[in-house]
Length: 106
Image (tube, rainbow, N blue to C red; front, side):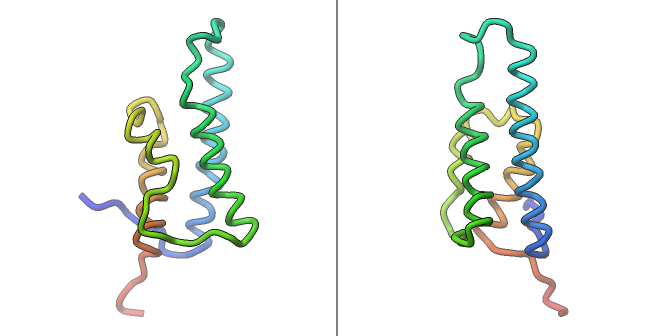
């Protein structure tokens, strides 16, 4: 099964913004639920930071599509079953690697 890629730049940007929100929300949930900070997952903040850096590169105008995985994919490969928005991150990465999904009819 292939992942759906964003069809427009606006859709792709919206996906990135959603991922930034979801990562912050996930971190906040962990902070709220875990009383013992020694059990706080070590991957949560690097995930949030790497998604934020992709967003910041878009804001700065330095973002470029590429063939390599985005940095957060290393975390996703290891902890994807614990990340509720893993499919969104996979779709973002797929769009990054293969570009926007444009219809051949247009």
